[in-house]
Image 1 (tube, one colour):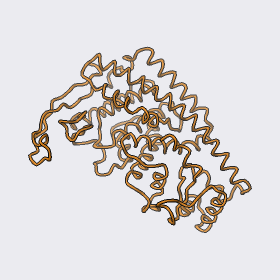
Image 2: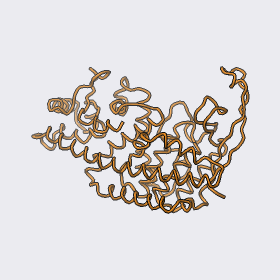
Image 3: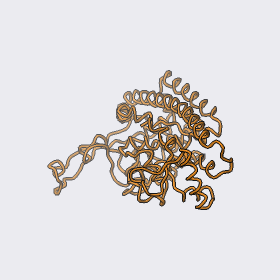
Length: 394
């Protein structure tokens, strides 16, 4: 028993129609089989200073989250949700601007404006939202719950749910890969064990999220989308455990800036050496805690930006009635800083004529502007005060 895994021998058959000599030769490689965790007290392997650091940071994050009033929470939540999803996608080399993601989130109204990567990030927004708002409210998790995150991602060209094929990281094939995840027949039992650990361990939520993430990424349960799914699961763990309350801790924003260390420490945990696994676990939890600490600072920074944005927008709508459609659009802009009159009509329950009139009012007051670039003459308007709020994070 231990948290160290096992390397399993594998062989890749020659592909005589392959484009390279290496493919035509085939060769040997090693799968990694992580240890099962559910029946172990993994947290007991942490050094005292690592555990104390994690508990201290968790208390700081929880205090920050608890001190945010509901109005502010509703204001910064969509901003953080979008920025976190963009950053998580960027770690996987899926790049899209805040504006392009907002275009994609318009749905069918903006089909001609969307691109594949922006759509992928928009689905990541929904997967993270589902993890926080739905999965975190369930008292127990099982394989179907984990698969729900993957389903929400809507990864194009792969089967939804646990994989039935080999997957690897780096390289053209398994022989030249940096890491080959466990054989597919091992995946269901590993994910079931991880869910048991999440449900039954009693570990502190921040430490639990750290351990769950490193285990999830070692299992690599899906054909694609593992990184984004794994980070969405982190948010569910933190929300369910009360470290974060109805919000987002922007861990991916921090990880993206410390990505080399992230990849290195995830890889170090994949060892068959018992002492090496314990050392790697401590290094990983220490890193994850530092990420959470910095992410908490980001939340406080975003609160300040959101308050400045509120003051700016309020100044621009001064004199409008509180029930005016133009004023009622303002809360929508956090969630959807790029919109159309049709979107406004649908979400405010007003006629298209009233929606167009409200848009004209906000354009005249400098809150909305006609779309630029590919959005010119498309009926799309953008809130130029809202879009840059988190762009400096990327």
